[in-house]
Image 1 (spheres, rainbow, N blue to C red):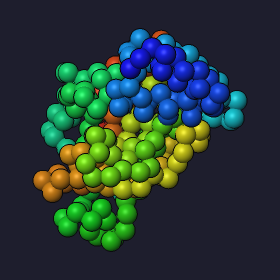
Image 2 (tube, rainbow, N blue to C red):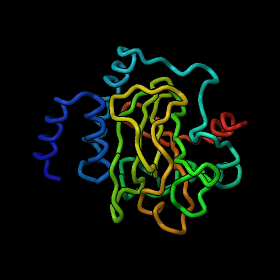
Image 3 (tube, rainbow, N blue to C red):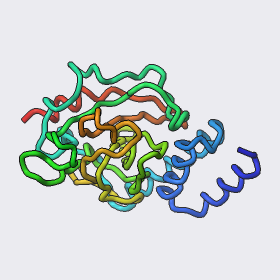
Image 4 (cartoon, rainbow, N blue to C red):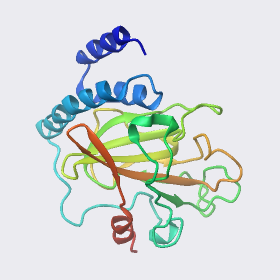
Length: 234
């Protein structure tokens, strides 16, 4: 990407709200349209503004023990793998966007034998719930088969108290927008089959959830299996 275009893009982002700017930035990172140094510098500048905006508009840190399991009506028994074995951080780099490797998160499966993204018992969509309080910073409400979007329809929620981003992917629908302040247990979407691999018939319907620690422009995935197991007890 020519330096002039990147500079112009960053200038345009300055006029956006901090969450809208993050959404714009992530799309460029995701699609590999911005170099790492420029992306890190912008991330370093944006997150303090987003944190300040969250608290200024009444956002509150999640109370101790108030986190919620991310799928309504399901629990820890629905997490794929054995004792969190689905989490594979090796090879993952957030700044590699759609080319990144690894699987630094957990897949949580719903009952959907006919793959219509509806719960087999209720015949209704299954809500994705925000694990914690936070602010929506990026989303993809639209998705088409053949897209490079590995996560399909996704939502990123920044939690200042946790120092990072919760990522929810493969949604059927997205119910929130960048800038929305959310609370633990609030529906932010419904479980679906969107995404490069999740749409394939071989893939059972599931939510992919990840936590990404962010510190001064540096990012690293964190295994939240212990948290999911704790809040998934029913």
